[in-house]
Length: 259
Image 1 (spheres, rainbow, N blue to C red):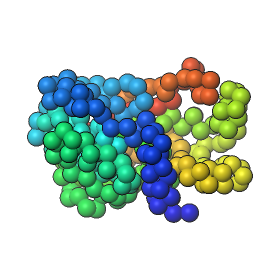
Image 2 (cartoon, rainbow, N blue to C red):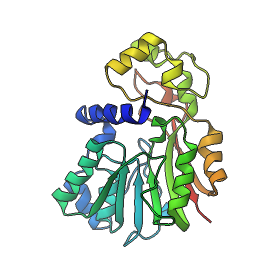
Image 3 (tube, rainbow, N blue to C red):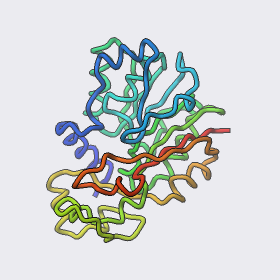
Image 4 (cartoon, rainbow, N blue to C red):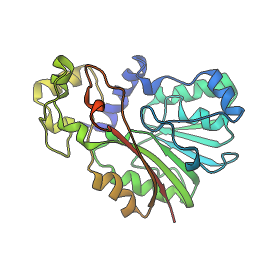
């Protein structure tokens, strides 16, 4: 299976279903950002701390695997020079729609988050990377490419899943609310799911996910050359289908700085 091609199609379907990461921001949010009242998320609920951002006016920002008309338009309305890079054309369409609707200048580029070869060394001042590397089997090239395209002193703001989320049988949780450990880590939909469930997900064009170890998610940026200057945990909203956030943080975010 070509994971990049498969997940591009799957996220087109997610856009049509209005997955929460595909719903563009409102004109009211854009106007507020123009007036200095703005925030973005990398993880489901907690806004990124404002002190993780330098002044935005004229700042060159790469929104990496961050289509959907959310982070990019807000940052552009607040004064940044924004490029949104994503694997899914329909996600980029959402950014273009907001840009046209609200008179914003946003560059959109389709591509694989592991390959930023279309950008020069040191081209960006800031990279914004919400929880999305869960959709690539190998995350280490993502960190290396992010380091390359950032200028010295630039920052990478990245969200990612807590790998422990992938221990559980989510088919069982969705039907009974029971959390049962079923899989070893690191986890991959393509190799860990029973064949019948995997085939069902492929039939429904559901995105394929891959856990990454903390060695890869935190050690990876360090190995690429970053130092970690900020960290927080977040939780998805808990419900009967997903009770896990009642017990533990399900997502994390880092601020990594290029020396």
